[in-house]
Amino acid sequence: MILDFLDGRVARLTRTQSAFGAEYDSLSDMVCFGAAPALVIYEWALKDLGRFGWIAAFVYCAGAALRLARFNTNIDVVDKRFFQGLPSPAAAALVAGFLWLASDNKIPVDAYGMPWVAAFLTLYAGITMVSNVPFYSFKDINMRRSVPFAVILLIVLGFVLVSSDPPIVLFLLFVAYGLSGYAHWLWKKRKPQQPAQLQ
Image 1 (cartoon, rainbow, N blue to C red):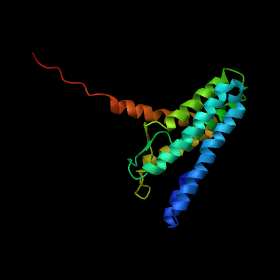
Image 2: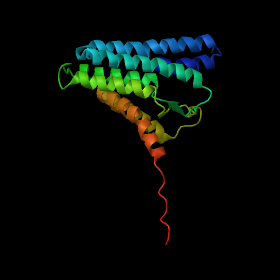
Image 3: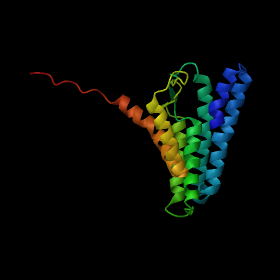
Image 4: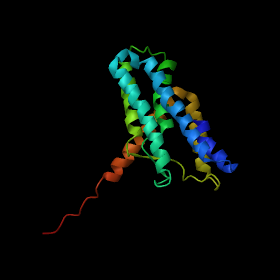
C-alpha cells in the first residue's frame, strides 16, 4: 500500500511516467489488492462455506478488476478529491486487516462464526469497490504548504495509538474508512428541511 501510494508521485517527480507504467501499475494493483486478498481469505475461512465461500471470493476479485478498469477510464473526468467506489488498496486492507486481527489474537477460524464474518466483509468490500459511493482521496492535501503544529501533534499521537496495538487500531481505521463513503453519501443525500408555510 505504501509503495502504491508513492509510485505515481515518484514517477511524476522524476518525469518518468508513461502509458506503460500506468497499465503495469493497474496489473500490479490487481494482483496485490484483488487476487491475493481473495485467495488468502478464501484459503483461511471462505473454503469452509462451500459454494458461498468461492462466490464471495469471486465477487471480491471481480469487483477489484472492474474497479481498476473504471478508475483508468474515469481518471480525467471525476472529482479528484473523491474516489468513485472504495479504492482497491482500502478494500484489501479491510479483508487482510480482519485476518491479521484474528490471527494476532489467536481466534480460531471456526469460532464466533468467523467464516461468515469474513464472507460478509469480502462481499462488502467487493460490492463497494464497484459502487458510486464517494470516498475521500486525500489528494487535495498540499504537503508543500506549512503544516500547523496541531496537525503535527495529531500525526504523532496517531503513530503512538497505532503502535499500541497495530492489528486492532489499523483494522478499526480500515473499517472507519470503509464506512466513511456511505456516511458522506447519506449526508449529501439528506434533503434540507423546508420552512413551514404560513397559513
